[in-house]
Image (cartoon, rainbow, N blue to C red; front, top):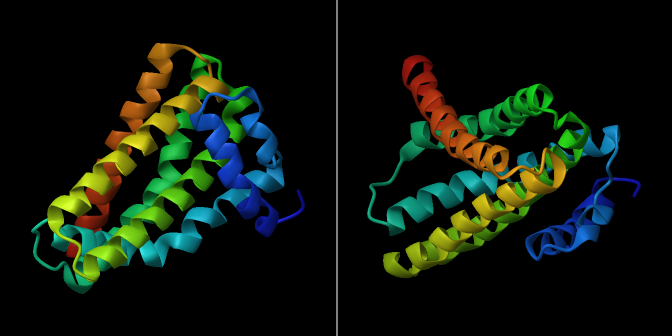
Length: 192
């Protein structure tokens, strides 16, 4: 693979293979140092859509509109998670013997987040068009579950392969999401 467009085109097949447990899932990704760097562009490409979708989905679920401060906090939380969650997993993987597979974990994680947030953006657009809150929730919850399942599969396939470590990586994803969103909220509230 030679570039971002190739990575974008190949990533759905790799993620599909990962989700279904096929061993050749990693063939779809550019497992190289440039591939790692390019993969960080994936979540950033979908960041604006994610911010809009977050607010639309929240409103469909009965929360009040977030406004400008909430949009900034959402964007900052997304960016912080994109950088800090992989860093935390990298520290754990290095300490627990899974460092060799860490680049593959990061690459597939970033592309998974890209496609997840594309799906969330479509859901947000449907919510803005009037899709009822219970229907939004019935789509959002499985998407969130799929995200956690893919993180678990990635940890099993790329890091140590141990169930306990993979579960720790999933729990760390939940904790990092909460912590980065809260930190972003505090930063925007303090300096915004």
